[in-house]
Image 1 (cartoon, one colour):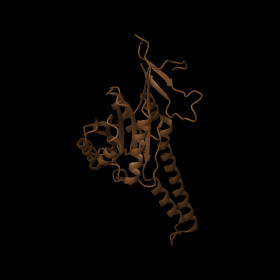
Image 2 (cartoon, rainbow, N blue to C red):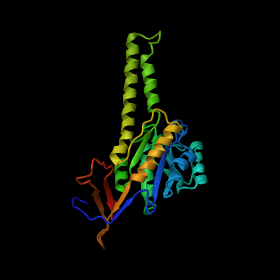
Image 3 (tube, rainbow, N blue to C red):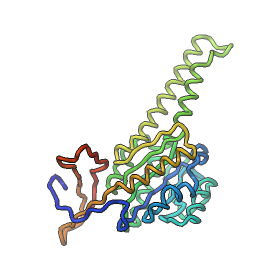
Image 4 (cartoon, rainbow, N blue to C red):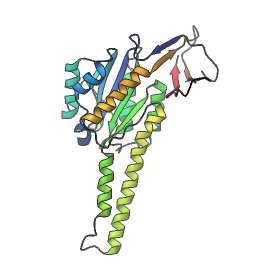
Length: 289
């Protein structure tokens, strides 16, 4: 810690009964996400909550209406009725429990602003709980293009982000079809070449934005997902992976110095020799104590 070794006083496996876990679900409420097959309470109940009684879900949505707001559909719960209503509120774009202004008028898909505001809302409820965040979006932000602030905020709170990119394969297929299509009869070769260059520029820009979004996984100790299609089978795989993360996560803690003034500290956990090929993900965190 802060470059010096520190004795560990707590060591628990994440799926243990003594460690409550909250999975924060953040949905970009555009049409592609709302129709992606993940907004089904039964998928989470059968593939996650049934085997992990210490896990709760909270549900957030951004993208409107109004487009400048983040909506908390529900706070942490495992109640199937509450979750069903929360998912329906994302699909139908209902008000939810609370709304937070993202202060970007006339902007849609404020991905990174929504992530930061969700983290702030989690910080308002500082009960002892391990959290991880699944963000479902097409990765094309209407606001801030640099995810560094969102990654920094997640690291400071010790919340790994799991970006789930939707519609990426469809965009690639559409671009390839457009590039393979013959020129329009009225186009000159010069016009056709100009249109192709413009299409390539747009595609490259969108692909770069999608890469920035998925990069949040590695930057925060999570993992990104980019399924060819987010059908129920792919959704079960994602949820099953999150369940595995909860089961294999370990919670490590230590006792702060008595009477010390709270301040930020950099904590890094390393595997020592003899780990037999084990790999640790997300071992660096900022913490205030």
